[in-house]
Image 1 (tube, rainbow, N blue to C red):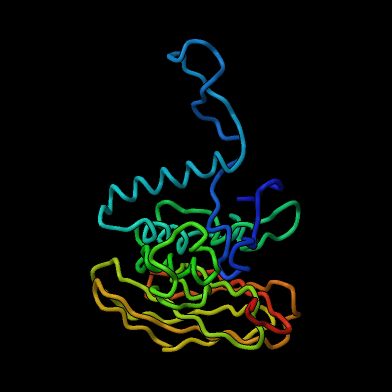
Image 2 (image 1 turned 120 degrees about the horizontal axis):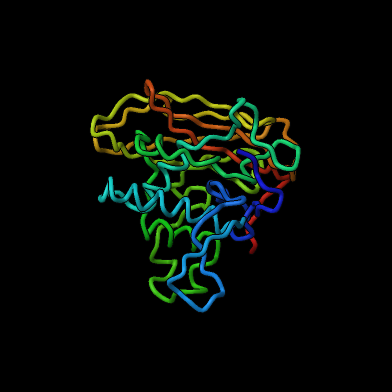
Length: 266
């Protein structure tokens, strides 16, 4: 895979980079498909070859629909998690995905390019529901722009980086920050998972516990502590966190931007 030069990229303006965007990438250049033309006969089949998010998004939506058919009890976020944690961030050669002749980053492709087959056996998923997302919206001061009830005072008080997401992002890392994630077993067997961590350059990353026991069909939580060592302020640095149990590898990108100082708006 290769990122198109015209593809949109992160960080997202909303949330100050505490939620990695984009999430994932899929084929979106010169896609040949059925197309509604300008002719008068709606029964006349028409095809076209076009490019853009309008091409890659249907790949993801179609794959999600097939996964929902296979796993009707999975939530939308479980399906999204399965795609993200099994995506790839390298080309066939094993080298980093490129964009306009340079190495692309998670701000270009998110978790990477979707791999449909592997997504059916993710091992673990990072799930979330409407309450989690409402709390996140409150954390970035967006919830009450659109809704009146419940108010943020009635919802859990979280840091935006603590949304239970398949990626880890901190948009203003001043010193040290700890984020929490919860994984849910979808194998029906559970297992013992160890951590394989590639710390973002110029940072130190530790996890607790060092070994995660996930019960069959159940959930387990862990904490990730990220500390700035030599990474320059104002520049994103990237890494990976993997939960490994035999052939199952649950991979999450890490994207952090060190800051000289962090403080609330008010």
